[in-house]
Length: 212
Image 1: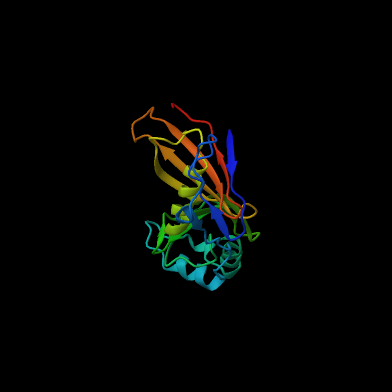
Image 2: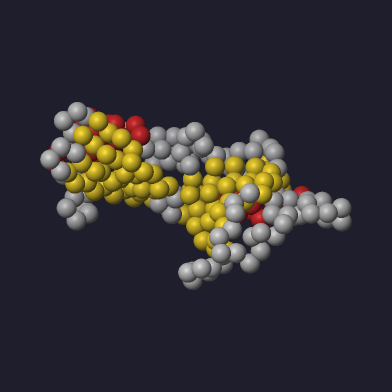
């Protein structure tokens, strides 16, 4: 794994190259102001309960899941990358004899991708546990800045010829970590490489390539 990073609190320096003595120093135009988000939990139980009751997914949300207690626990578990609520929200859930699975996700304008949270619920006990969180709702500008930081820290040219094909973010405690997925193409067996970018301090970790 290759690590490169530029340290800053508000500003992250995007380095054009640090491969040798003849490499040019970054110019003011290459300095990127990174808006570091503050993740938060913007939902309340009433909003989650309304989303469950208004679900348009096939089968909707099973009746045992539609309680204020469960909705409140779900709301307390859901984070967004900058503490802002989704503008589009969807919910779906089904139950067996004693246990249920609930899915809640959403997206909003100006943020690429969507977030999807999956919960294991035991209605009789009021237990709600996060099974998985696939988080892709990230402001477009933050994704672009993370991409610039990754490419600027790539002194070895590991990302040359690769395109940014996807991204995700990590909930607390890794609140500033953006994961970028670089690919050579959509074909099976094409080069794949993931990069972690800490947008708070500018640290970049370029992962091992697959089929590169």
